Length: 411
Image (cartoon, rainbow, N blue to C red; front, side):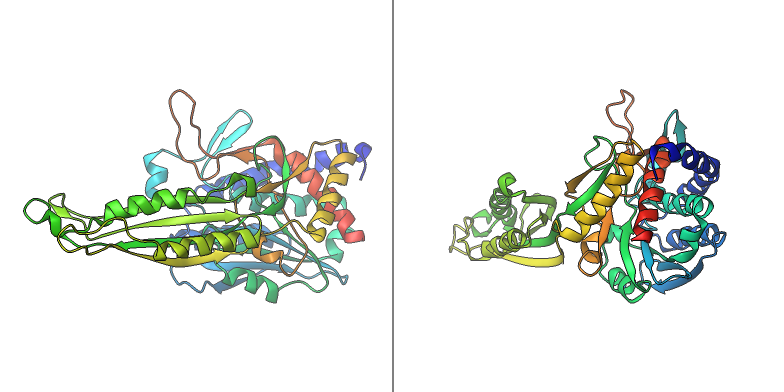
């Protein structure tokens, strides 16, 4: 597809865009916070109804964790040997009370649409529908030849490991790629693909102290909060920008009434790195905190605080690799032919691509352009605005996706 073909493609996408935006508005109206099982299931119903128009048949698979909704798979068999998996998710990060508190709902302002999930990742789901609708009209032989499998994670914001295994079992025959429709926003400097993504580990640090009366028996206590403060300072020092390693203390709790020496305190930590070896070294450094001498001891008898470290979960890094680079080149060539700007960059956030890339060529960042994902706040001075998507990016990124998928199918 060359630049002279772009007006025809743009016209087709523009024709389908009003329906696509109505589809997006219906999705945004339903709260689908990860833990809102009812809302996630309702979202899946809307998705199934929309893709049924394109001949897709739905399958639901319960998540391993019954708190979450069902994973959704939409299948359409093709006439040829090759297939493609298109990946999105049904959940968002916003509890219903947060949406109400911040009055965060569908709002169209000039070129921007604000609302929960417009960018992450209800906009990505809509982009899949828009691309397939345009491809069916522009290149019906390509659309009919490929076997399509749309995979929608019910709990992507928790990055549950059962979903990629279900995807693997449902890969179309001769699957050419898993195409992940997370936003193409990245660092925010125009449309961009994800070249690779950091892996992560979540850990908990628990400090056991000894309680005592804060006034009359203070010397007998071992303050767990004070010990945790020392440990947190050590954890913060593990961050190493030169190795693109971040170690973030994101949650702390401990103690109780202020007239007691606190006997417990804990924190939770998120570690991220592009390199698996660097990630593993940081995890080991966290466990080494258990062996460091305690700095807080009871004055009366020397009772020392104890530190316990626990690995809660770990997600693999998606390192830069030849198969993803090959797909990036295909998409960049399509953008170049259409004279549309597109680049690729590493991303610190995770997606289902972290797992899928381990067993199938995977490309991520194919959704619309938008910013401020995971944010619902808006300030009167405009210094804070919530998640939004740029309407024109459905046209531009949609055109690139159609052109690139057409070439992928012909290889």
